[in-house]
Length: 402
Image (cartoon, rainbow, N blue to C red):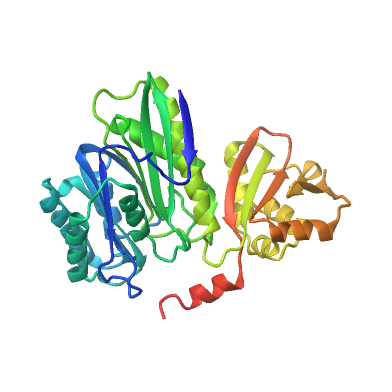
C-alpha cells in the first residue's frame, strides 16, 4: 500500500466524476459563482457540518441526506450563504436540488447543496437557475473543469484550494481529490467552510463517515483564522467506486490519503486568511492528553496578542506562554519550554539568551512560523495552524458588506 499527495491534480482526478464552474451573476464581480459536481452513477456520500446553532438551509438539507448510498451530485453557489433566510431559504435550497435532479435524471434527494457568502440575503434564484443550466451544459471530467468548479465555490479567497492523492491496494490504484474554500470566518469545529473530497475507491457509507471524521479532526478541526465558526461549514466525502467495499487493510491507506490532502488544503485556508501574512504552525508536547494539547494549541492560535506578535516578527514568548497558562488545562510551569523557528527562547520556566534581531528577521521572512511549546512531561501532543492578524484583515472585514 502506498499514497502520495500533490497540490496540482494533473491526471490524478478520480474516475466517475464530472465538474463545472460558471458565472451566473450572484457575485457583482462577475467571477464564477455556481459549481456542479456530478457522479456518473449513484454513489456513497458522507458529511460533517458546523456546530454553530445558527445554520444555513443547505446544512439542514444535507444533514438529512447523509450518509447515503444513492447520491449523484453536489451543487454549490457562492456569494450568498442562504443563511438566516427562513422558509424561503429552505425552499430555494430544495429548488436547486430539484433542478439539478431533473437535468441529470435522478431524484431530488440524490442531490446535495452548499452555499457560501453573505448571511441574511435571499438567493437571486433567477441567476441561480440560469447558472445550474449553464453548469450542466459545461460538465466535463477534465482538469480545467475541476479547476473551474473549485474557483466557483470561493468567496473572499485569494486562490483556489485543491489537492490530490492516490493509493494502491492489491495491484490497483485509487484516486482521491479535494477542493475547499475559506479565507475568513474560520474556526471550524467539524470541518472547514466548504470542502468536498472525492474518490473512486469503493467504500461503504459507514467507512466514508469514519474516514471523514478522522481526517477532519487531523486537519480542518486544527485550523483557525479568526475564531469565528460559520453557519455554513460543510465537509463532504463522495465515492464513485463500484464493486466490493475496501477491506480494513486498504482503508488504512485510504485514510492516509484523505488525511494528507485534508491537511494540505486546510493549511491553504490559513495561508489565505483575509489579510494574513504568516501561518503560525503550533506544535504542543507534554500535555496530559492529546485533547489537552489541542486545547492549548487552539488557545495560543486564537490569541490576538500572539497573532499580532507573529505579524510584526516579535518573538514575544510571554504572550505564548501565558496563553498556554489560561487554556484551562493543567500544565507544568517549571518544565515549560518554547522555540520559535527552531530557536529556543524559553527553557524550563525561564528565558534563555538568543539573538532577538536575527530571530525577528527570520520570523518576518518566513511564510510559516513554527512555534513549538512543551508544557510538561505528559504524552499529549497536537498540531494546529492559525493565521496572524494584520491591519488588512481589520480593514477588509470592517467593510465586507458595505
